[in-house]
Length: 182
Image 1 (cartoon, rainbow, N blue to C red):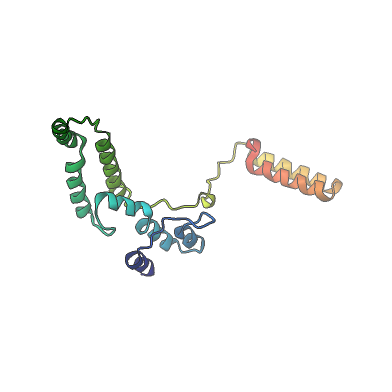
Image 2: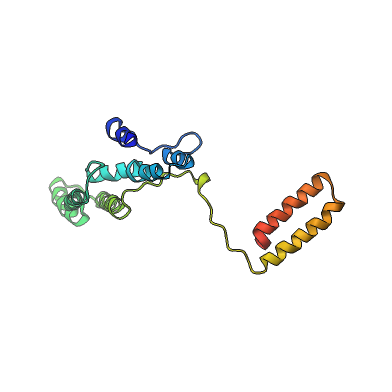
């Protein structure tokens, strides 16, 4: 309720990261508030506000209002419709226009509508530093390699001391984690 009030009454959106690159949704997720993070991405993203502005609808517009606004704007900005209007105006004024603006406007309109309807207007506010990378599956024979590395580690523990032992342990851990890809 507080997030909705901040969005509606104060006009605050989760559109800018802080100095560390975190959005409010990232911070909520890091604190264990996964539902709040999902709500912020779905309802308070700057991309949703931008898409709504392109269509000329409020943030809380439903699917019917989105479709009506989209169809109205399509009639106004479709390159074929706009080209005909420009040809008449250009002929009267003696100007030449290539119609590139109409195509860009129409494309932006279509992307905004698609973002709001297909993607649900969800934002992509994420700090790339905090995205969990999926682990690759272990290669064949990985367990055997890991056992051999552990045996070698045990043999070396009696012989090695200090920093060299620590270095080798870290190196074996990397090899165990990444196999021959490391």
